Image (cartoon, rainbow, N blue to C red; front, side, top):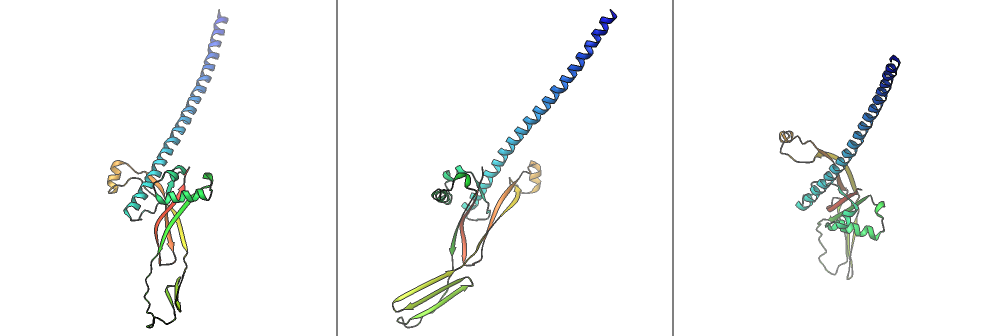
Length: 220
């Protein structure tokens, strides 16, 4: 009887050990599963949040263009599908040129369109006699020269305009939503910041003015 009891106790001890081991394995599997699920959900939320930030930044840039202020100078973050479906005439023109150049979708990384104008006024006094041949040189700045000459009934105008255009793309961080002051932001507990790509264009020739501009990054 004692022997049977000892064997029974031994079996119970072995069973308890196995149950304990399986229990730890089950807990480990559960923890890993929860961690993987949390990571997948976090990545999904981050992806959606980044998409919201991208769209919000694009809207702010177009609002600035519509107001005619050009104050935002944000780099547009567009997908390939946005190029062909955009109502922006400059973006449509860029996409048409890209297709004409046979640039493949996977090759495209960035687009740039800059419209410029030359604004300059210079007065010159011509000789009194309209039948007189003359040559006049106008130089409004060190990078711009106009030569006007007349020989007989032929009037010649030569323009030499030099310019170097530098494009600077830089990153800033700013709050996604605007509030009147920090107290209001603190009340809403809204401290979400987005990384914004901005640009600045510098022309060495002061006679050249930048008009409509699009700087576009292609995002996947």
